[in-house]
Length: 363
Image 1 (cartoon, rainbow, N blue to C red):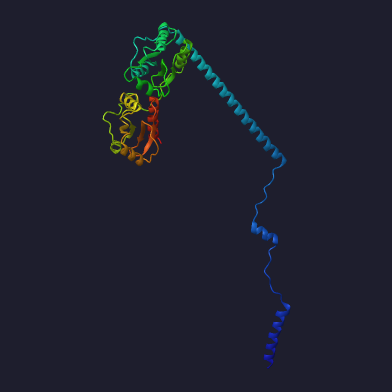
Image 2 (cartoon, rainbow, N blue to C red):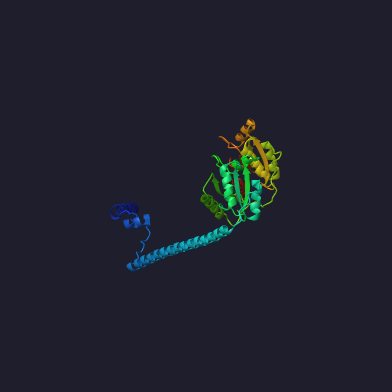
């Protein structure tokens, strides 16, 4: 009994101790400052430069700005000097050429003119001369007066610098040689004169009667425009051209041939009675338009063939009117890589063909 009494008393004492003499243990509270610091973890403040450091940075920036201004000023002054020197050199060269031009006494001969523009251009390129092209009429009073000016030496056209080509109104192909070649759409007045170099670059055009002083000014200024070197050619001179005789008249056949030979197809949409179309064909045939057979094949389509025209337009998704002669240069994979419409200048054709080929080879 005593043992039981003490056991009960021990249990009661333990319960009293727990209830009245102990405090519940609370989790440790993190100070608010530490909580904020842990949550946001701000970067340490950037140290501010001292007044001495700020002053040094400002002085360095100002020094760099002044140096940049000085460099720009020096560069601008150098460019101005170089431009002035270039202009002075050009002025001297112009004066030398002008003196040489004026010193020549022998004019071109009107009795032995070249009768073909193409032959005159060939001779001019070979001899480094200019072409003096005169289109007129033997009965035209202004042409007669102009010829008299040349014979008497009043109008200066030195034989040393010019190849004379004369085309009369009634000459065969005179309209094609003049109207189409020079792309004249306005009324022509006689004498019609064009001065060009041997590379088809037009240096000056005069149309109609003028006083002697104006003729001489026109001829002299055209002469002074002549460049000392020929234009860059991407194709070698003398390479055989494609043949336009018996040309393929079918697009699909032209595309197949171009693909089989791995060449570009020069596809022309022409008109049999169109002088511009005939001019283009003739210029390719005589080699004035460079279309080397090493790189190109040729095919054409007459625009009167409506079914073929519609098929062509549908195949390449072409809408609207097509200016004759229209030219499309097509790659072996069947994609158009260059196109142009109308126009008659040989230089324009040659530039278009060369530029298209260059971009195709080096896209």
